[in-house]
Length: 271
Image (cartoon, rainbow, N blue to C red; front, side, top):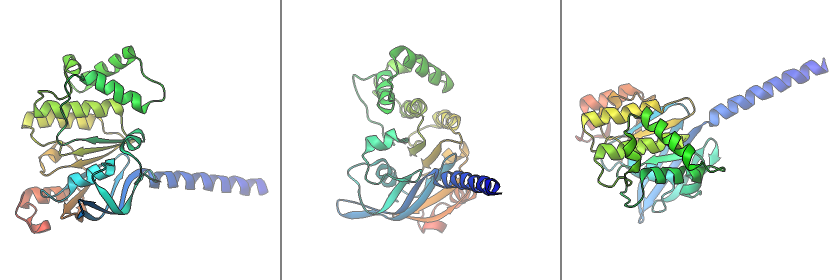
C-alpha cells in the first residue's frame, strides 16, 4: 500500500513538473516601463511569446514596437525603470545582450548594418561559435551553411559577399533569415522584416520564416502593415499604441486593422 501511494505521488510530481515546465516555456514581458533620455516610451507592457507560437505585434509608427524589441535584446540605450523580462521562467532583465543571445534570443534588425571586409560566411561562423561550447570546424560549417542556403533558396555565392554591403533590401532581410536559420534561436524577434521589400522579396522572406517555425521556437513578428501576415499566420496578435498594449486577439484582429486601419482601435487614421 505504501509503495502504491509512493508511486502515485511520484507520478503526480512528474506531471506537475511537466505542467510547470510547459507554463514557463515562453518569453514573457511583465509590466515593462522603459525610457530613453528621461522620456518614457514603454508604459507597462505585458506580452507573451509562447514556445512554438507566432506572435504579431502591430501598431502605428512611433508606438514603441522597436523600442520593445531592442529592450528585450538588452540594448544599453534603453533604460528599464520598472518591470521584468523572463525567458522560460528565468529573469533575464539585467543580463547583457551577448548572454541573452547565448540563452536563445535573436533579433532581426529593421536596418541591418553594413560591414565591409567581413563575409557573411565568416560572420555567421563566428556568431555560431560564440554560442557553442565546442567550436565548429571550417569544413563542417561550410557544409552547414550550404545546407541552410539550399533550404532557403539562396545562391551559394551569397556567403562570400561582405555582410550587407551593397545589398538590396530583400538581400539584407534574407541574410537575417539565414542567420536565424544557422543560430537556431529559441525565441526570434523580427523587427519590421517587411520594411522596404517588394512583393516578390516579401514572399521569399516569409517562406524562409515559415520554414523555421517549429514547436520549440517562438517568434515575435513586429510589423506596421498587414501584408506580411498574408503569408505568415499568427497565433496571437497584439496592438500597441503610445507605449501600451491596447488590444490582443487572433488573426481576425489583424484583418480588422487591414480593413479599417488603426482608427477604430487607436483613434488614428494611419494604416
